[in-house]
Image: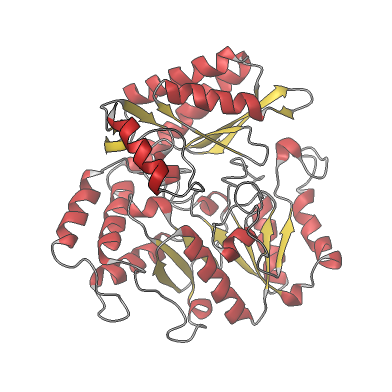
Length: 432
């Protein structure tokens, strides 16, 4: 019996059924863009810990920072005995967040926790309770963030009742426009509909914030028209609604910029961050306008592990690797190559309905027929299963389960990237 088979037996006896897995893979160690399992099998990683490992697995700077900090202080709780890494990371996140105004930050543990706290802050600062989110959006798995998340299966099924005062609007999904329009002749019709939405759904006087993913991650890597979010931000400002950018998956250099909203010149009132900023360690943050952040009373924000010193040290090293280590620039080159490659595939393979993304946040929408745009979740699932068997880790996403998303570490080397792309193309070709 292999080590994997033995561990799988133990896993099935000890771990709850509700914890899903891509496959029977147990990682032993990893480096840059590859993972080696307990039996010595090497996998090319196009998942990156679901957008966490932008600077690569076991990045040297991150590992060194973790080691050095762990030798000095692992935990004291920032509420009890403060420490410099927390302050230094808050300063750095403020610096890299768009907005020519004074900002403050709070450090937390996970993406869901960041979103929860952004909602808390927005509600208290505004004195209002309603929250607007997008159809197809994903914000977490806690009660509040699960309520904000759109997709029912598997994230919400049977877990109700959900948190109240959550409202939804359609995301600008141009390939499948919810309003039946064509871009650019639509003149961003979807954004203008937000003003009309207030009439029959909720008065702006009751809405504290709109929470938006700059690129809808789990929703299918949807990229809105460049005019969309600037207009939505204007509508929010005109109606006293805070604009919250959920940069948890799109931030940290994934789109070629530290924050995806930079692509459209949008300065959010509050920004949530997590995943890639930690270089593999659990950490998240809310960064926002000083007057909004400081509306919360002392003791109203925080938690036992929020801004753990080891995680803060890892995050500072991860951000340094992106900004000063050349990984951000390398990611921009990677994104250009991926898009060029996938567009060439689209010309060859009929099942690719659309190629979309920004920077290295790229996806392929798989369809049964290009003319009808019929989603093909069955083939998408088969492609994922096939490439995993050939030692390429890949995930699907989208409300219809028919989108192949690529979150390969930005630091991937050319040889590994090409090998992974070859495996993926072979699987796509088989079903075209």
